[in-house]
Image (cartoon, rainbow, N blue to C red):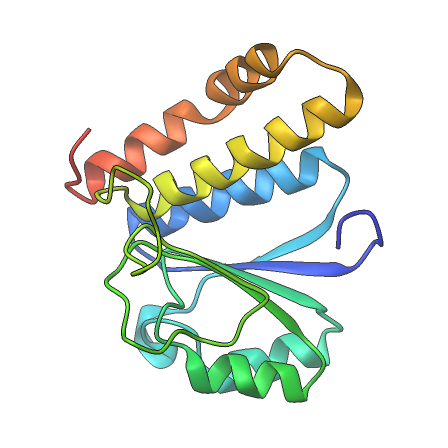
Length: 173
C-alpha cells in the first residue's frame, strides 16, 4: 500500500494505549512516505471500536486501506462492509479473539488460537511495535542494512510511546 501510494488510515481506540498505538504506526508509516491519516472515534457519539458509519466516511474520503490498532478483533461485519466499498483491512489488536476472526487481509493478535508468539500480554501499542519491528527487519534485509541497527533505531524512535501505552493499559512489562 505504501509503495503503491494508497491512501491509508490508522484507526485506533481513544484510550492511552490506542492513541500511542495510532501515533506509533502513523509516525512509522509517515517515515516511509505513506499517504496516511488517523481516525480515533469520539467516545461520545461514535463509541468504541470500528463502525460501519466510520468505514463509509473513510470510503468517501478515498481511503483504500484501514489498519486498526488496539481494536478491530470483533469487527467482522465492518470488515465485510469495507470490502464491499473496496477498502482493504489489516487488524492489529491485543484483545481476546472470538472463534471467527474478521476476514481481513491480515489479523495480528497474540491471542489468536494459531499464534505461537510466546508473550501474550502485549498492549495494543506493543502489538504495533512488534509489527513495526517485523517490517523493519524485512526492509533492512532488502536494503542490505544491518538488522540490529534497524531495530535499535526503531527502539529509539518509538519506545517512549510503547512504554507509555503499555503502562497506561496496566500491562506487564
